Structure formats: structure tokens, C-alpha cells
Length: 152
Image 1 (tube, rainbow, N blue to C red):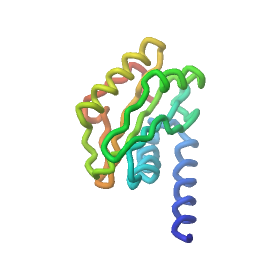
Image 2: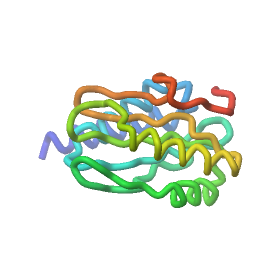
Image 3: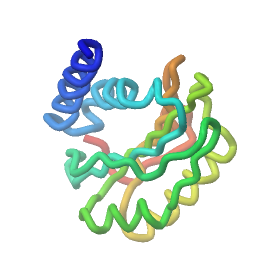
Image 4: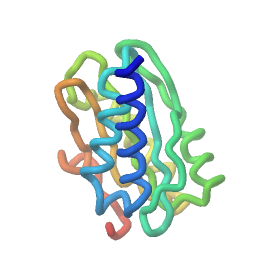
């Protein structure tokens, strides 16, 4: 019970950091928040951080839940939600319960589809993070994703 309270307090503190500054300026805060939220989940989950024009968080939402080794996500649902929120940018994150933070070919292909769909509506996919117990990987840092919008 005490560990659960500590975990909740930690997540709240990390979420507050994410809310208090532009997401891309606080990428360490975002990564820490997502790592705490997702690294130890038993099955895959896709989250989307929807951002305004100044890269401030509009909403943090679970977009899909899957199995131990896969989670299909709907490009259409993510883009639709971004339009509903009037979001200008999205950071996607999903976890690998296997413990390896390495993007799969399926991850790369799905992200490419999302980038193409979002771009037609003027929405930028700013990053896709793969979170695992062993660490995390950023599509942007790996050169797998190029932003069309200026970062704060």
C-alpha cells in the first residue's frame, strides 16, 4: 500500500513537471514521466501526448492496449483525437515489456503511416519513444523521424 502511494506521488510530481514547461524543452521530464508510467507494464500500451502550438501538453491519453509483444494502434484514431484537441504536435510512446528499447520494423512502419496522415492536417509527430525496463529509445535521436515544426 505504501509503495503504491509513493508511486502515485512520484507520477504526480513527474506529470506536474511535464505540464509546467514546453514538452520539447523538458524532454528529460517527459522521458522520466513516460518511463515511470510505462516501463514496468506487463503488456504493450500506446500513449499520445497531444501538444499545442507552443509544445505545451493538452492531453496525455492511452490510445491502445495490446499483448505482451504487440499493440496495434489506429492512425486514424490518433489523428482524429489530435484534430478534436486542436493539437499541433504529438509525442507517441509505447512500451516493450520484453525489456529491450529497440524499435521494431512494425514500429517504424506504423510511425511512418502516422507521420504521413498527420502531416496532411498540419500536425507534427515530434517523437516516438520506445520505453522498456532497460531504458528508452527516441525515433528522433535515432534519425528515424524528422520534425517539420520548429522545436521550442
